[in-house]
Image (tube, rainbow, N blue to C red; front, side, top):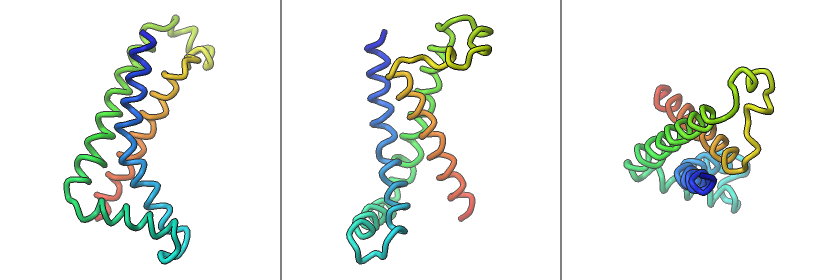
Amino acid sequence: MNTNRRIIAATELLLIFPAALFMTAVVMRHLRPLQYEPAHAAQQIVTWYSVRHWTLWILLIGLPLAALLTGCATLLRNWNRGSDPQKAARQLSAAIPADLATRIIAAATLSAGAVLVVVAAHMLAN
């Protein structure tokens, strides 16, 4: 069972990586002028994403959505298999398992949700 969670955690990280790379590049290009190296490399990444129309739908929406759905399903399944829900509600630390794979799944799921919110807000603004 723990092996399955490790595989799901690794898959979640792979699914969220392209969107996290893009979001990091968007932030990095504003930190310094574009002629200096960190900002220039970040601008190259943002340009690569922007000239390919499929990247928005697949890399910035599809993969994070898959990570979000997979993570939510996995965390819900872990929650249902866990201890008594009333006891977990009383003790917040009991609600969050100490398993590293589960924490990675939770972090990747939260990150995927944040990426989707940012992308949706940007799409609605334009």
